[in-house]
Image 1 (spheres, rainbow, N blue to C red):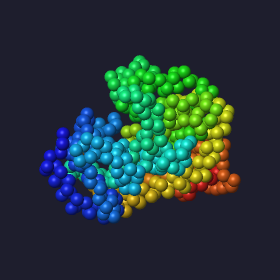
Image 2: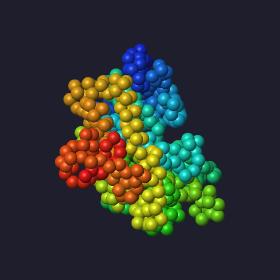
Image 3: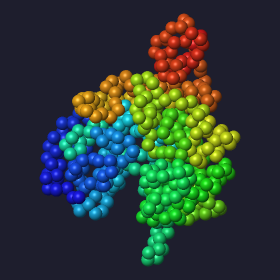
Image 4: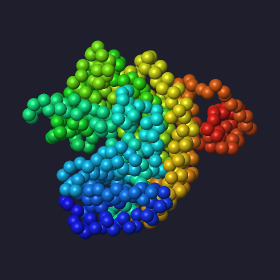
Length: 483
């Protein structure tokens, strides 16, 4: 359905009031289309109108549709896809939004189950610092999404803070396009699979959906074909099926995967306790060029046939939960050792290998001094906290949903919650150190009377520390031994 004249006129008139929010320090995205968001809607044609904080405006035709299972339960603040289009809506139209890479397909993450509306973004920012693709790309080897926070209005109704981000796709990962060998005959080269799908209702047995864009490889191990959807067929699924069903050995994983990539992903999930990404869920596997020979004498050519793992959907990180129930000092307490034992394929097939375990420890040693340090995590949390509060966006969102009959998950006191999450990660940092036997060169000791609270000290669960017996506590981002 094309937007009618009245709908497009409304989009133009909204430009006159955009200055109210963007002047306060956060970009504003106004989405206009006929109708409303519904659980099973098709893409709706409409208009996007994005005003940056300096007053710069981008207005383009676009298609919109809600995305993800969570969105169906939070229609007051759903996540949705935005596809930029030409004036007649027939072709893609790439555009660079808010300084991010130019592309046509974008995600508006509603973060409806994250009470601080930043976990997914913080986790991806850390990942992008910690891990890069094992080869060069036009985007610096980035292996995760990039995003900017915006305030969103849909058909003049305020929806609150969203994160506008690019997608994991062929261009980002530099996968080779399918090529036409002769008229009607195509050669598939680059492949991109996404774990988890709702496109197959019964996932008890292996099989495909009707158009081969989704596949259940084995019991409750289902995937979506992200690229190339236009050439979906059983043959396109064969590399993934072979890897999962026949590649269950450490030697296979070493040959067909990049161990550094796997170890970095595992450390990321372990350190940030990304609860919804354990096991075979919420990640991509890609191959740059499946036509290459894995046994090629030239390692550069052989590497093009290897799989790369890319994370996805990190909103349960930093002690969070899939339904927003962990907050106000109560966070995920899954031990590091349990996450290590429940890693996704292919990590589970090398997780007991001595070479891989040594690499895993090395990755933690590197990460704890940089991207995964407690100081870096705190800086990122506090930077987004300041953006939300100083722009007034958090106060506007809370005031809006406090008056709404249906609400997403959020907290009124953002500063307090962010501080508690930062303290939780300081404790998690120590748990990672304990697991890998790593420590700083200087050990601080703090003596305190038995049974008393040590100022702003916290135990390894992020709770105020009361210690009648010797224990490790966190104070000011440092570890102390009390006696």
